[in-house]
Image (cartoon, rainbow, N blue to C red; front, side, top):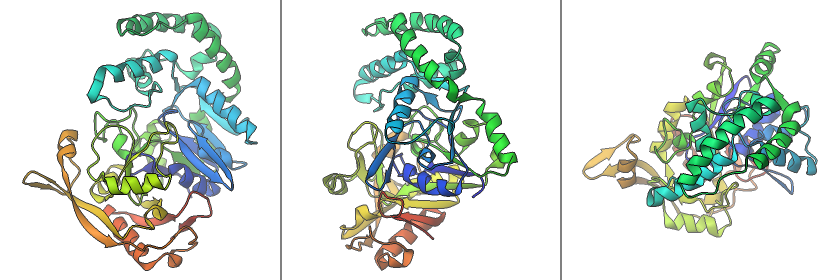
Length: 422
């Protein structure tokens, strides 16, 4: 498989966790490269359901090494809870998972600031998960962040924490929020640091040693292209680079060592939180929610749903250099008689055949649709491409052609065996 980057080609929640799990069979190392525990990757193994927030999905396969890279922001208490939760389910992390010593850590004041800033924005809120991810990345950029390497050094951590608590308590007070207890935060985070110390390593060196041994690596991102801080629907975005370039900066593996980019996308479109979604549609939202689908793995919030947007996915192909497409949730459309696909936008008298950079313009765009006949028969039992209904194959080939990359993987359900390779 060589070195493969897997990215979301929409607004996140495309099913990357399941595709990563499937592809990990052919990988030696799985690397998470950005985001934090605001992400949620869901994997079904038989009757068991696993929801992973920080730990790469590869942890569910024995013998695979998992790396949380320097580009990830880590809530130490959340990571401890996730490791313990997996242990109780019979999944071992010790000796199999490693955390970059230079990854920044999410602190309680980051979460408080996240929540207070959303309140202040009012109707202009971003729709953040309030996990403190944005403020943590903000401290990273401002060069005042705390890192895993600090957390596992008790004396250094106490000194740095005292300064950060003092400054952030003043800010929280000005926002009408309660100040944090230095003693309590220190106690909680010292305990987490002691627990996590065996997992902390120089992961850049580990990854380059793995390459020298000829091992194959899979780079796992969180969220999706249009939540990227640079290329997404700003300001309704996350605080990291969710596109393919983030795999290099978030791991320490150079771009010229990457061999392939796989873009994951749903057979329709979803989004969590605020911001423009041109193809949003009440009919398909009601259908999917009525089936018990499209609720966030991290927040439980109902996702906003719409028809497939080929203008967006074509832009994602350009930005990420996507070679192969993995289309998921095909079975979600099994009962739809007429399926729409956005092939352009109309804004006043102007037609857009590309993705506008201005989020306000995008919010005002009306989608231009092409229509496809639905197959109206179950696909969840299909094992091969030829077993899919003819109209389903026609639809999948069309959205791949409109997106501009090769259709390589089709998923018709959450289980590993509900996956076909073309």
